[in-house]
Image (cartoon, rainbow, N blue to C red; front, side):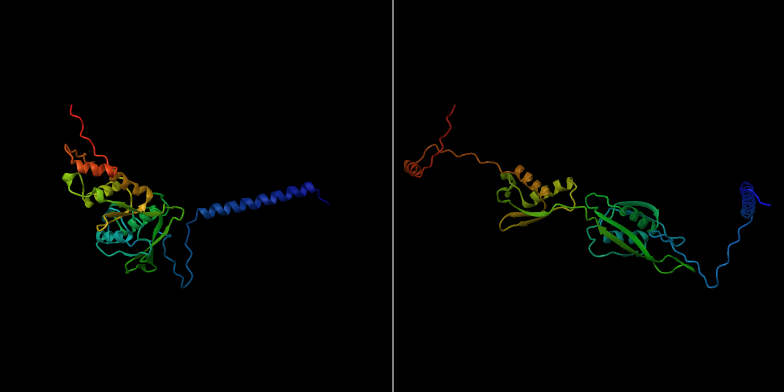
Amino acid sequence: MKRSPYFLNRLRLGALAVVCIALGSNAAHAQNQPRVPLAPAPGFVAPAFAPPGQPTETPNALRFDFEFPGGSPAEFAKALSNAAGERVNLLIPDGVEDLRISKLNLSHVTVQDVLNGLSAIGSAFRGTSGAEWMYQFHQINGAVGPNGPRSVQPVWVLSAVRNQTTTKPNSILKVFSLSRYLGKPEQGLHSVEDIITAVQTGWKMQKISPLPELTYHPETKLLMAYGQDAHLTLITDVLKQLEPPVPAPVYKEKVNPEVMKTLEKGGLVMPQEPAKS
């Protein structure tokens, strides 16, 4: 007997509904059953590793207080080793001597806490003076192995790259003559040390880092300064304030006539004594 298309479609939909109900019942039953882990294949060892930049720490790691005033990577490594009470193996590449590690004041931390925290700070360019580096600390061994913690001391590597978009003004050399400013204090003059100290004090107040270089040449009494032009203008400002006093003119009540004639022939004019009131 020939079936209509309508009847066949209804038949197909009914069969599909039965299949969906059966699958849903099996899934619900499976969720209510306790999960049994699959046995690993013979000889398989599950790898033990930590996410990049966050290696697994040895249990019962030594904790300590750490205070660091800020400085170069070499100064930081030495201070961290002293605080931890043991040598911290930190590999520092060449060419990063002017990288400045941030000032730190931490309590109850481990070596890994300190280095991971600094990696978070140094992973982005901060754009401030002396902080144009991006850097991170990576641990290359000492993590937990397949059979538990390794006994070797961890080795950390400092990876750093300079922010090429940060441009600094070119440094220049300027020369200043100090001959007119040097002498005895009672004469209103100063020593080389006093002048240099005054200039450097002004730079420190402006928080300029690193400070421009100053070299004094005693034979010629010249002060040579090397740094950014905007910073060297302070030297000119300081010298203006140290201008020696102008000596008062000396008047002569009586002048030898022969001397007067000689002065007149030379086109010189002898200043006259101010009239007395």
